Length: 150
Image (cartoon, rainbow, N blue to C red; front, side, top):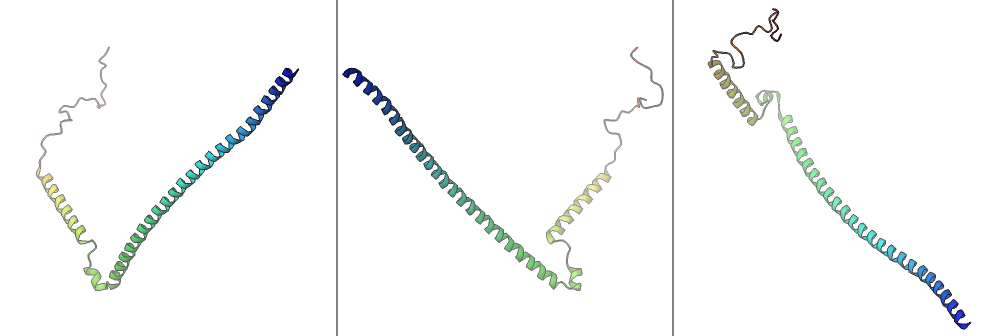
């Protein structure tokens, strides 16, 4: 009877130990998974902070460039305003419509066109282009055509 009692206690102890180990070990696994997830989230947060900092730095550079461009535009506008305020009715007639560089380019374009027109007038065309035939076929006349495949 001692053997049966010992064997029964061994089986009951094994079953209780199995469930106790499973309960304790599963909570340990969950704790380990949560710790890994927390570590991963922290690294993602650190990367996100770096990305945001880089984005803000790029935005600051772009805003600085925009500010510089606006300052240049404001300076040009002020200079143009001063030039327009200095213009009197006598000066307006002497003031050129185009800039010096534009006037030079226009003069070159006009002279090139005149040269091309002069060369075109010198050429005399004596024969039609090669894609025209010398003898008419009569295809488009109102005459009835004879059927060739009978």
